[in-house]
Length: 70
Image 1 (cartoon, rainbow, N blue to C red):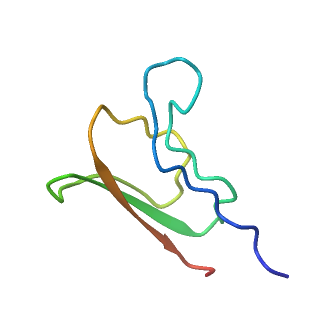
Image 2: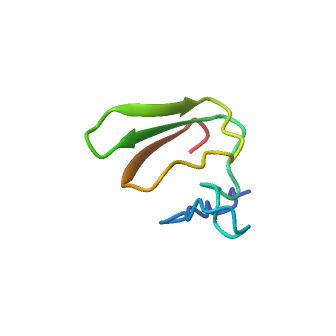
């Protein structure tokens, strides 16, 4: 059967208002790795089992999501 479609936000607003405070990826498969980079290309976060809890600060970030099952 096909896997559920990933739902990845294009922005977060980490201001503790309860809306879009975290970078949450919906339907994330079990086997994956997430890497987050700042605007200068420095890796600032990595997780092999991302718990949808990265909040960040104001700024521009890039991410790489490596999926083993897809």
